[in-house]
Amino acid sequence: MTLFGVICYNHCGHCYIRRSDPLFLSRSPRQEGFHLTVITPEKIFFDGETTQIIVRTTEGDIGILANHTSLVASLPSGPLKVMMEDGSYRLAAVSAGLIKVGGNKVSIFADAVEWADEIDIEWANRSREDAERRIAAKESQLDFDIAELKLQRALNRIHVHDMMR
Image (tube, rainbow, N blue to C red; front, side):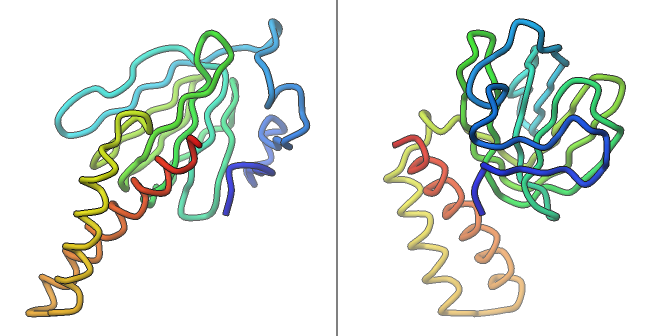
C-alpha cells in the first residue's frame, strides 16, 4: 500500500488525490486550510494549520482536505504525511490510534508519533530484532501479543524512515 492514489469513501467530494494532481504536488494559493492536532500520551506532537494530510486507517490510506465530512477511524501503525506551510510535506510514523475529523478540525490520538527524519534507525532495527526473538520464544500469549505490537511499531518506523530516501 502506498500513499498515492488515495481515495476516501465518505463521498465528501474532496478526497480523491492522484500523484499527478497539482493539489498533491504543490500548495495552491486557493486551497483552504484546517487545524490539525496530533496528540500522544506524552505530548502534543503537532498543533497547527495544514491544507492536506494523508494517513493510513484500518480501511486504507485517506487524504483529508479542508471541509472533509465528519469521520472517526482507527489508525494502525503507518505513515502520516502533513503538508507544511511552505507546501512541502513532512512524513511521520504513527503507532496505532484514532483520527477524528469534523468542523474543519482534525485530531489524531496516537500511542506514539515520530517525524521520519528524527527516527533512530539503529534503535528501530534493534527493536525489530528484539521483538522477533520474543515472538520466537513465545513464553506466554501476553508476551507474544506485546512482541507483535512492538514488531509492528519497529517495522513501521523502519518503513517510514526508508520512505524519506
